[in-house]
Image (cartoon, rainbow, N blue to C red):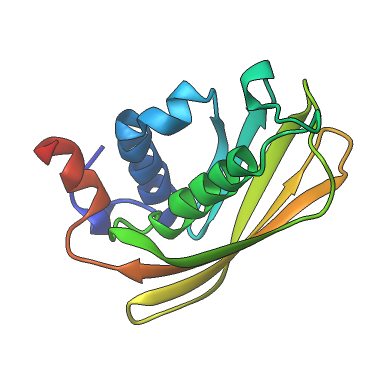
Length: 152
């Protein structure tokens, strides 16, 4: 694969950025989060709720749901090879996730202009039931996603 972004299609660039990020993303890998799909401004990630994720009300701890959504947001907003960080995020919990549920977080770009972007993430279980909705605002900082791979 070529090193120059101009020689890659937008889809190839998004996939190369996801691969570079995933190599460094210990949290995602530790939680067993899988990247199902990436595209420019979009990402679908999947996580199965395990015993360690269950809180005192027999449902998935909200922090794990936030982590899944935040990760999908991160892969989506970094898909252009510009390093982006979260400027702000919010989540609304709609329904509980249960032990063994397979959750899919779908991040979609709403807007991207200048140094900021807005992304919505929907988390659904294996039955298509909406579990949570998340909104993240990204901020572009210096550097490129793939170059960080070589600097790490």
